[in-house]
Length: 480
Figure 1 (cartoon, rainbow, N blue to C red):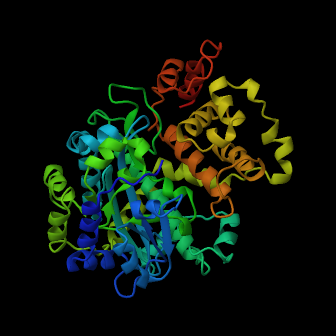
Figure 2: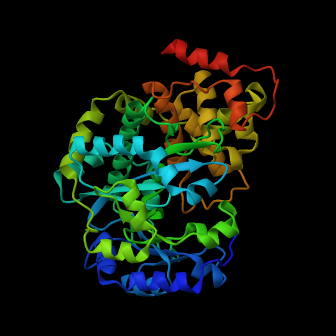
Figure 3: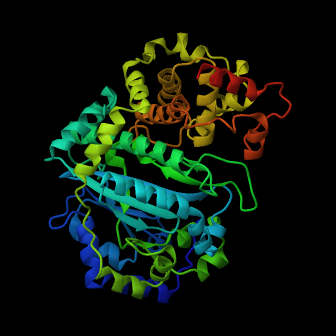
């Protein structure tokens, strides 16, 4: 639902914020300096909603158009694709599958809930010696660093980052009419992006281990459902899902961008609250407490002053990431990834005889729902994780679970997603690698892999179906 709720005073305050010299300098630094090294820029916001944009986004590959995006009072994003480096982007955030209202109406309470995991992540990056920007948004943090293409570490990164042959072919194309794809994407950039995604997966495993018993929130990779409490189905997402998509498709909010999502998507917070809340600023936390940070974020004049004390430069963290590569290569997760990559999925010609012979009626109804309602079930993280757990318990190899999902992405009708821009095989491989990898390493303890928990999450389509998920869980734990 799009509706104008930003007052004229708020709109002018955003424009004035962007006219501040220090704010402009920080944004330019984040985009790569002069000249910008990011591939494109995106503006998002209420101004576009007011002017008839169904999706209030404006994309440009012309750096000089940044001025216009700021004058329109838009939130600003830069491409993750960079001409000189692989960016390491880690988005961590509170999520609630039922409502954003509490998060936006009481930011301090929810950032206090996130604080234990924030400290674990911050400590982990410091241990590895990874300098980073840690920009705070209205729902969490973005950790950003980079590995230059010129660094020897980047060659190590490329070696752990395989790219599917079908995706490599897509990277080489310039289809025309797509301002995100105006030139071929070098394979080294694609491999670097794949590699840094796997390293974030490895770090996510470490954070899940370290935060167990310390966080009041369930810590997950992506926003998979947990049982409801008084605030809803909430959790803490180590959101690395950008690595499920081609590099050319992803962008990230710039440092010192405004944050007005709640002004645009009113169904998440309600119109009254959307009108009352300020437009926030996205600022680096550095050594601030979350309370000090909130005081700055909610006041654009304070945020503009804070910009003079910060940097927007994305730091070169190659030395720290080299240490992560070394530990990852010695890990159980790396061994699982190697097995996953070496296992060939069935070819499209074989799908009618292999993957499509799976009868959903032979599965528990909760898992069958992901197949029968595939345009929902094979895009929803909770549903995908559940299908992975069930099929893994039934002795499916994770690469063949991914092959099954790929076959639906590529061949079945009704998708509300442009698979020419996104990539079926990469998306399916990512989800199955993530959720089966958590099982194999023991970081999915399967504690909620039972019928009652699935009902409490709101994902059970047939109570008293006669199936017992506990039996499938026992099959997995019996193999461990």
